[in-house]
Amino acid sequence: MRRVSSGVWLVLALLLLWEVSARTGLVDSPNWPPLTRVIAVLGRDIVSGELPLLVGSTLARMFTGLAAGTVAGVSFGLLFGASRLARLVLGPTVELLRPIPIPAVIPPLVLFLGLDNGMKITVGAVTAFFPVLTNTAQGLRAVEADQIAMARTFGVPAWRRLSRVTLPAILPYVLAGLRVALALTLVTTVVAEMIAGEQGIGHYLVLMQFAGRAEEMYAAVLVLAFLGYALNRGFVVMERRLIGWFFATGREG
Amino acid sequence: MARRLLSLVPGLAFIALLLAGLEWAVDAGLVRRALMPPPSAIWAVLQDLGTSGEVLGPLFATLRLVFIGFALGSAVGIALGTAMGWWSAAFRLLEPLVEMMRPIPKAALVPPLMLFLGLGDTMKITSVALAVTFPVLVNTLQGVRGVDRVLLDSARTHGWGTGRTLRHVVLPASLPFILAGMRTSLGLALILAVLAEMLTGQGGLGFLILDMQRSFLIRQMYAWLVILALVGLALNALFGWAESRALHWQQRN
Image (cartoon, rainbow over all chains, first blue to last red; front, top):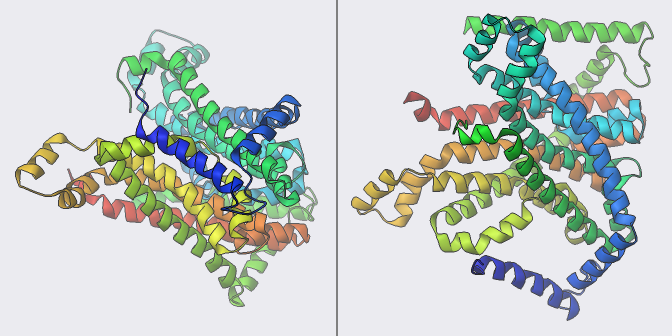
């Protein structure tokens, strides 16, 4: 059992301050409900199934987008890493598109894909694409060319070479990109929900703000905070399982 | 230099080809003009916006948000990260709070911030600064903790005080980390600025893109999107330039 550090006390004190300031009218505002009321609402809406349903639909869109963006990112990353020509021809286009802040592509996507799943999944996919692409291409260049050359010498066919040698070797790099993509995709999927359509936890958050239902709004923020935390933790656990060898051999970076 | 310029040719040719292809596809009726006007029409709008000076107001509004928010967030992140890396008491005090705030998708904080700070610049700058702070903080912390013990010992041997050691040893040594954090944050700053403008329905480029879409002024929407993309590109280039200047000593070793 670790000794409770000063930091934990600080967090508790701040939460207590929240509660007290709201209860005693120190901050007298309908936008500042006591923490216990927020938690009560959070519990109520989890039990009633409302929040789990919203979160489920957001996560489903997010993971679909993430998967599509990852597949595209890995494919283009392999192409960029393997072919100088591809890099020369397509590189500038990618560099031109990459710095566009994702929320800004939502309005044009709405024109083409409407307000629902298709648009939001595309937003997620576009978000995930760039970090995965960059890391895959970097990984391919960092992986010892010997490994691949050796496989070729032994006459391993191209397809098996890709699946048995190249992909496992660059996996740590792909996962590093995926980790960045995971956090960003959660943000942009929620942002897409906030800006357009009537789906998911993002829309719920904005709706509750407009409706002046502060408890529900803060409950949604808490849910998103938990999601951000849980997704990252889950990813770290998965990464350790998949590429424990990478960390074990001390070949980070 | 000439070789570098030459290597850009295939990529730029590809972009030109894409634009020409798009122009042709719209003219041939393969793409609906209502959704995707030909690049030449968007270019005409861009020229109008440029020559009339109409571009300047929204452009500076957004740049202001990004710059002030980025500067504030970076300053707070560097200060807290340095304190936490240097004094273990500060680390113990703040670490739980930071770990609690960090996973919150900062986009989710925009609606509550709107309730407290209104729709003006204060709210938008706060949103941007919040998103910028945490990546900078975490990277600064990592950098400060990784400073070579020998450097610190020799600073102490020379009788340097804390302030001097921090400024002349610790900060320069952790600069690569700090800048890496700031690079991540720059992208986030743009995302948050655009989102805040979209959600408040007022302000610069982000608001205009959404507003033009809702008013079915599609050419204008794309024109503002192009301007925003250029802003993203320019900010990245500017940062890259500043980074290579700040770290020139590193490459020399």
